[in-house]
Amino acid sequence: MQSYKDLIFGESFVDGSWQHASTHKLEVKNPVDLSVIAEIYDEDRAFVATAIQAAHHAFPAWKAKSAKERSAILMAWFDLIIQHKEELATIMTLESGKPLAESRGEVDYGASYIQWFAEEAKRNYGDIIPGYTADKRVMTLKEPIGVVGAITPWNFPLAMITRKVAPALAVGCTVVIRPSEETPLTALAINHLAQLAGFPAGVVNTLVGANASEMGKELCESKLVAKISFTGSTRVGQILMAQCAPTLKKMSLELGGNAPFIVFDDADVDLAVKGALAGKFRFGGQTCVCVNRILVQDKIHDLFVEKFSAAVKALKMGNGLEDGITLGPLINPAAIARMKSMLTDAQAKGGKVILGGQAKEPQFFEPTIVLEATSDMEFAHNEIFGPIAPIFRFKTEEEAIQLANDTIYGLASYFYTNDLNRSWRVREQLEYGIVGINEGLISSETVPFGGVKYSGQGREGSKYGLDSYVDIKYVCVGNVH
Ligand code: ADP
Image 1 (cartoon, protein in one colour):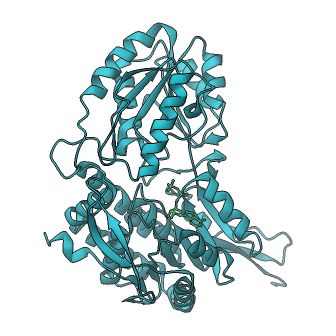
Image 2 (image 1 turned 30 degrees about the vertical axis):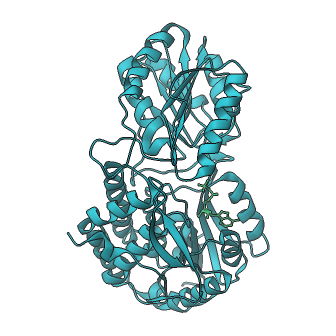
Image 3 (image 1 turned 30 degrees about the horizontal axis):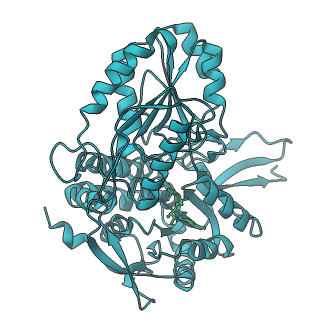
């Protein structure tokens, strides 16, 4: 293993080289102790325009390569990321606070999208359609849409990038990535590996800057950008969509969630506890598919609470680089403030905190369980994005479905039952893009990831993942005799 320090860069990667246009730097801090890990030139809107130009110029030649050539470069990128798993995982833990075992898991998970789309690149098939008159021959071609702007969050510093750019690059698009200012180091490290893998200059660009809204505006308003792929909050997704309207950009939006986790009376309680623990406390609750509301049926409620509390007590909070740590710090002070205000609100409305509830310096929050949660509490409707587990009690299946669907969001949902008929009834009634049945971990490159309602549009991963980066060109050959 190299030192992880060899993969830390202080400039943006534009048009095939490390560059800066700015004169000042932003600090990347470790949320464990707020120490400065690195300083990076803090770029702004004008430099985004430069990167878009580079991606625009690189597009024709990248598009003209055979799918097999593009696939080979993607495979080389995949191999390099896996070879550097330890360094990348260390960087990720340093800048995000994610426990090291989870960071290693994310390197594998993020890299798997590159491998998958390297394979899919070669199967970007069009159709031959029976001619609609005897002299016509009809076909479709799937062509890359052009320059793609990828705006990504801090909670999966690697995987949210690869999930977008791997399919885009596979079909022949070029990309401008704007990672979160909280976690730019992982993004730059994988761009370095992309360069080593052999992507031509201008095909992959990563721009780091703190001025998210201005950088976002350039990507949205530029006529040279064909598509924006965004993962983040519903609020910012709405802003981007409005900004993209004048240029009629294509968009993929992976936005907020409010995942229900329903435990029916007939469920295997131990399995449900295991699923709830993984689904709630993965990265401290800071993922968009994390369990937001645990709904437990009356008869099984007390048993579930007893076993779940015991499991939550066993979590170990601390520095994610240390062995055995399962819960790191939250990403920033705003997250701590949100936990506090959600708990104060819940307690004022009758919620009972039976575990945790306290913030710890500098940026930790104890794993927390709240009983007697009700629909009028803030966390019933807003994403918690932190280690608070509210438990709601329900009596009937109808009530559970009504509660589960009582939200503007529709990303992931989970339920536990051993009743075959119920499992069909409930999956069909849940208004969500993703349903986990007797399973709390549902992510893989092989499946379509995405939501309905205010959770966004488009699907990432799976055989559908290429669709949003291609235009279908219909070709009609007439007068064939
Ligand atoms: P989160 O709560 O996950 O940070 P955000 O939606 O605030 O969700 O952020 C997701 C990404 O979008 C981050 O990279 C952030 O810097 C960026 N972002 C925030 N506001 C804007 C904006 N107005 N335009 C473009 N990008 C933005």
